[in-house]
Length: 361
Image (cartoon, rainbow, N blue to C red; front, side):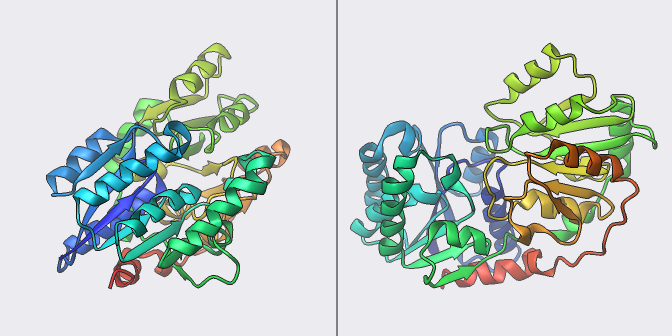
């Protein structure tokens, strides 16, 4: 059995973690060929960490990423892990920071070193100096020390790798049947809990409460819409959760509810008339949009225009977050807008897991 070490920034409810776990679960349903261990940073989902440890995975939690603890300390920590544990393959999901770990893996003679791009617009949030000096150096090191390059979409590949690089496209696979299975009793309970009538328009956002996901924009939209007609359901957790909850209370916004983390996300999604993704920075392939279109093909999704178009299975509208009026008008029209039939074969875990696991052979 081959040992694979995944390096992820946040081991939790993010899209990259979801993709890895779906592959892990798909493998368990067949012949297990690979064992997955993880390096992650502090602030990860400890419940998930414990679950993975019970399955036999080793989880190494670092004090922070390169920005928090510095390049040298980060390098030494990864070097120490690799010296004390033998791995056949190391698979990085940490964008430009991957260059540090790739160099450590090269030094420790890990023969297969994979860099996986999940994000399409990291550079937008960087200073001019970083764009000119730091990022080009990172990109050069990534392309030099990786033995295989992988991306979840073309824009994600263009973000991290050279244009002429040989990149394997690997969509994030999903268990389609899982997302198609809705518990009607749970849905009824959600309706009762939040007083959702048939005439109410339910707007949702699901994700990690951080700067990138831009939940604040969604809350500001809610403030501009009639609280009797519109209910905004925000699902997830993260570092900005308390601040955003306080914003809603302080500004007396009555049509926003926070669920925290929930296990039955698809039951909530089945109620959404409109799903928002106003991410500040581009996302390589936002799994949550694909999940939403699979769960409820009557739901209209609205995403910032910097989000990957490959997430559009037919029912996503792309609008700049500089155009509030267009977002609001699209939300208002969502119940009357005709949705398209969707095809999700490219994202079926049965298909993507085969390709994902094949890159390890």
